[in-house]
Length: 181
Length: 204
Image (cartoon, rainbow over all chains, first blue to last red; front, side):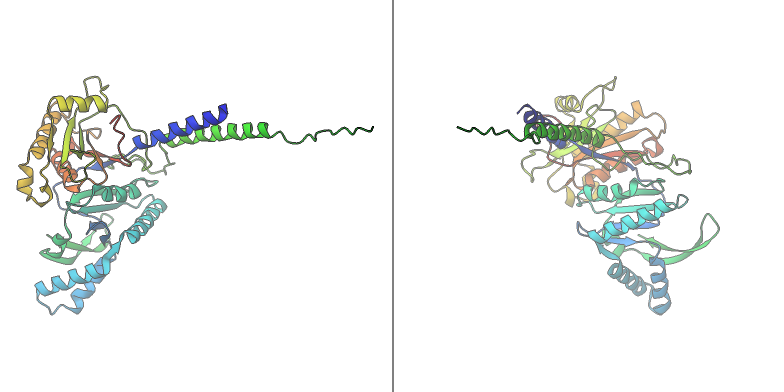
């Protein structure tokens, strides 16, 4: 009977402690400078996310080549609509992609990633926290992240979206996406 | 008359077995609770630590740090039982000796009227209108005053904390982060604390 009471006391003590537990994460404050990121995660709503990574530049280049005859405005609209169609993912797919990113980061200590997370004003901030929690605790701490406010409409109404050829730190030529809001 | 003596078969003592099982159970519970309270540390590679990367804590839940160490904005509802009640923000400041608890700091904040309510339609306000709300003015003033006294030069350890329930709208968090970023590297990061389960009203 004493042991039963002791077990009951311990379990109760443990359960009472649970409501007091919090999660805490450090988030860097945003900087007012031209944004660069390997991955951009734009929350559309609580269930859908728009994901842009390095695979997108090939798609944009392809559209620019195939539809170069269109006016700049129509070309921009076409690129944006195609990107949204192909790169809008669900929360479950987002988790899968974040896990894959984390695995890639853990496999290469010399790789570095920067993930920019854009959240609409009305989205619960916990969605952002969940994403950051997945990518912040890597073995080599080589995924940096930043979080800013932003709506999907900003991307839809961007002034320009195009590919630009740039040289990275190691001297390699890269095709990057440039979005002018 | 023949009497047959029946000897009890001596097998496993059930009460003793139960006692051992409970002992093992207690041991495992205590061990489990102690190990969950620790922050996990992973073995790092040969690569040197990048000091540009903000330090992150484990995503596992941990015990509430009840002592206030820096400026903390607590965001909640005016009436915790009413999901539609206006969002409130309280400004909690640590004491001189870093020994002020969250609870005491909140009592002081209420006493000193260092709190404000966001208007019910704050999500629909323009950026300018939102900045002119009483709550945003309080946020700006608090950060400015705290920075003036405590964050005199850029330092990675300078941070501001935000404590809010998970459903808190990102606009509020974003505004506080943007206000911190106005001071550049002087306030390089914010700490976000999310309450994972309903807050116990007996404490903070």
